[in-house]
Length: 153
Image 1 (cartoon, rainbow, N blue to C red):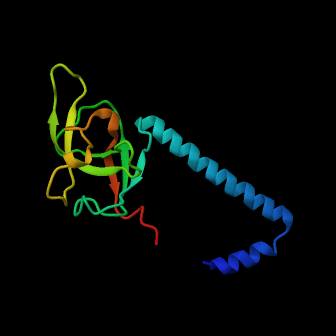
Image 2: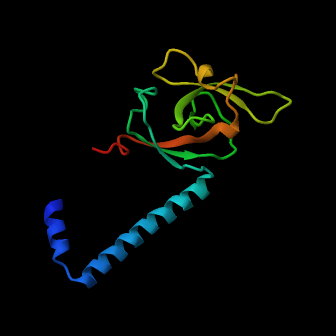
């Protein structure tokens, strides 16, 4: 396998036709990746079907750098599910486990309480004035985890 420096040297001495072909190939590769991401987003009904875990709050179950695949179907949440949610005004989504599901008979939308596996307390203090999380704040429920796949070194 050639080093990046050797590749760059070979690239600089290439003909203009070869350079154009490489740029077109790169464009096709990036376009294909974007289309695949959008198709996955449509199939899973999740705005962000793939997320990288950024903190240690779910260790040892999920570690920093793990890749999570999410779905956002209208299936009910159960205690033990791992969900990703985003509080308005915050930039980083939170990955935590459902510890309690509260279903009000007057409301068809379940309300959930979450907690990180590595945290001592539940997440009520993160909900900013709410007592429960509702479906509109949830990005998705994790259905597959790939360890360390999101870790770039």
